[in-house]
Image (cartoon, rainbow, N blue to C red; front, side, top):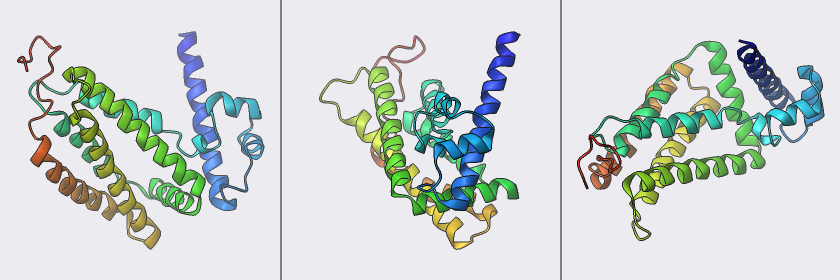
Length: 220
């Protein structure tokens, strides 16, 4: 019980720091605001900020680890016989559909889009995050499929899925910066992602449908 309360407090502190940072960055600019200023505004020490976030950029991308974990879990726990492409695609489409959101969340998304557009450091960080997603997804599929060193399919599938994700994000952010109503962004992203996933399906529709390590899966 004590541990549960402690973890809840840590999550709340992390959330408060991230929200404070995003607000300050949006008003003054990412490059201008210091971590010390974020700490002061959030009511914590600078050391506490770095206990929760390794870098200043991580203050903006505070949910990337959770996204990665959910993406991998969607592939790892997919039903027997479902290709990895379908499982990952279903996860991404579900995320985009949830973008038909309330005004407060929409404003936060617009703030985020403005920040990324104005900061080369954040765009560099985001590229690294997407590369990490691809690496993790590739490793999961390769291990699951017992892929040999010369099998390019796990890498190609992982990179292609992340390309679909990047382009869907880019389209949504462009819409936010242009003033597109928030409730239109989710459907637009879903449409764009479906097109990308359909293109991938020509080559990956049946790949990684079986998991050799599962007793219920047929041998490949």
